[in-house]
Image: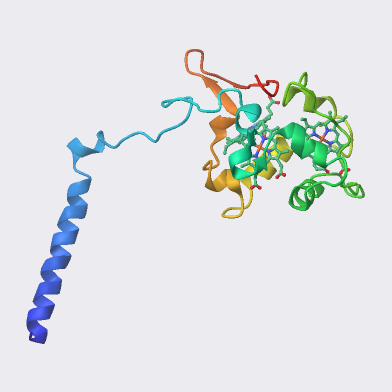
Length: 174
Ligand code: HEC
Ligand code: HEC
Ligand code: HEC
């Protein structure tokens, strides 16, 4: 093939691509762009009880994600990644101990019960700050960002009738 023929072909291909890009956004097509799926807003919410709906025991994955199990293991030592995130939000001079004394029982409503200390004791940061940092920072190394797409509505519930946001609190097993 000659060089000139090649250039002509390239030119035609470029025109074709341009034409189709312009075509994508014609007036009639604009309102056919599909709304993003937002759990609990325009598609069903698989985690309607918030924390405890998602933090479950997954024996098939050999992973116990229940907050009772996670916090229990923290009686001895807090996960290093979580501790590092928490340390950034306590007042200067406070060094976290890396141990968490609280026990979650079947009667504990999560996250309501957490607020008894969080935001009240100097070394226990406000819960929303801590939870946002744990779930929404990091990227590929954060399972909440990869598997759950950093979805706000898995924690924040929206009442579509009244237009009110709330945080649902529930016991494990509910
Ligand atoms: C839709 C699923 C989902 C919901 C809802 C959710 N979490 Fe999580 N949570 C995760 C995932 C995934 C991680 C691990 C993040 C990572 O990879 O660093 C996590 C991590 C945590 C951790 C740190 C544990 C550790 O060892 O990394 C705590 C504590 C926690 N969540 C508490 C809560 C609380 C309290 C709520 C409710 C206000 C909540 N989560 C709601 C999925 C969820
Ligand atoms: C009895 C008081 C109390 C309750 C109730 C409580 N916490 Fe804490 N929490 C603390 C204190 C104190 C710290 C700081 C611990 C340290 O020095 O490492 C802390 C720290 C944390 C941290 C940062 C990691 C660490 O331990 O340093 C996470 C995450 C956390 N709490 C989650 C929770 C969740 C989720 C709940 C509810 C299920 C909860 N906490 C209930 C007192 C409490
Ligand atoms: C793991 C659970 C969780 C996730 C995920 C989450 N939040 Fe929150 N958020 C909370 C909790 C708990 C509170 C405290 C609410 C209260 O006390 O009523 C809160 C409070 C807030 C507040 C008020 C306090 C502040 O920080 O100013 C804002 C704004 C907010 N969230 C925005 C978001 C946005 C935007 C997203 C998604 C990108 C998101 N949250 C994802 C748990 C979560």
